[in-house]
Image 1: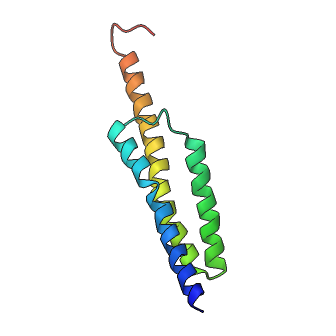
Image 2: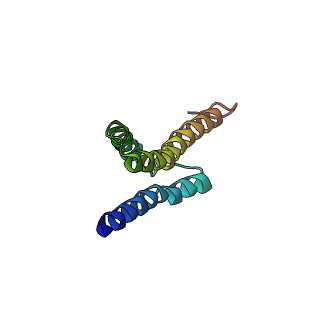
Image 3: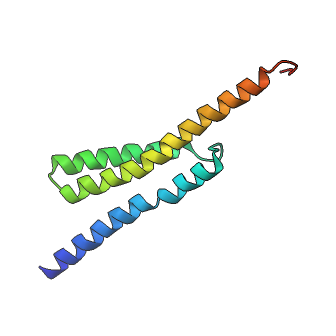
Length: 105
């Protein structure tokens, strides 16, 4: 039916938009090089939900769902990776600053 194709088209578009919504957050993290104000738990939770959804799509052979959520996993995964990367990097730079000669903790 005609509405099936219409709904599938908008479903595909919504999966793409969902993936694209993580890009501004990743760009902001990359520009600021600081992730202290970003919730790791929230983005990691999003990533886990997308993992389960993608696996469900593969099991049910719903390729649109499976590959659409994989795209979201990539963009959300970039945000998660940047959060972890900048927290480790900033923590190490704070430790090296505190361990400089003449600095008291």
